[in-house]
Image 1 (tube, one colour):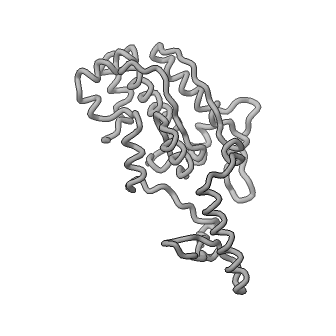
Image 2 (cartoon, one colour):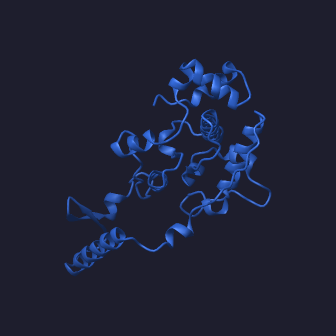
Image 3 (cartoon, one colour):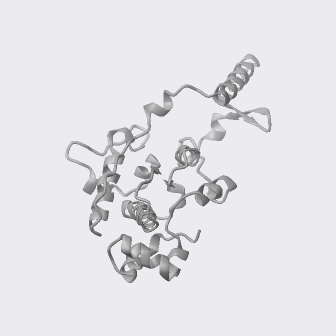
Amino acid sequence: TGHLALGIGKSASATLTLIPEEFEDITLKKVVDVIAASVFKRRAVGTRHGVAIVAEGFLEFIKEDELKKLVTSHQSISYDEHGHLRLAELNFSDILKFALLKRLEEFGVKMRVVDQEIGYELRCVAPCAYDIDYTRNLGFGAVEFLEGGNSAAMITIQKDQFVPMTFDDLQDPETGKTRVRTVDTNCLSYRIAREYMIRLEKKDLENPEMLKKLASAAHCSPDQFKEEFGYVAADK
């Protein structure tokens, strides 16, 4: 899910943050075109740099046939015993980087793209005061729960109270796997995050002057730009 990526992008003021929850039908082409359109929009206003945070979870939604065309010879697609794609064995940042560079080159745009997978660096960072306070509370609640003779639950804090969630409640009865809590794209936090992103919007295409600048940045005609990227333009 996109919780972690969205939190990182929002707190770091990233130019763009992409999470699987905002897409209905996920393809690598669509992800690449959203980023490329953002690049052209930045260049249209004279800015030639930016940071895009892309959730690794996209890999689980991109069709295997599309991935097979993109993985290098030393990479392979495999799944664990639970049926989950082994994300660690695929270099998603490389796949995305070269797909983006190829797309930009179609418009005669050559630029440097630096990819960085944030994994161990994030997990090994020193905890902040909030982290320490929160986990200490959870630890206290877990011990208190066990001392009461209880088990088989995960401790949560809701409205300043310990609320145990049993493993059965966390499990999807149909798949036997833990339920995944996805990002609610209608929530306030996500709406605020989107407001700070630089993304192609429909109003950009409806503004003749802005459309002209976008087309110039992409070295194409306004009509061609709309044809190529209109489908990824956001309402807001």
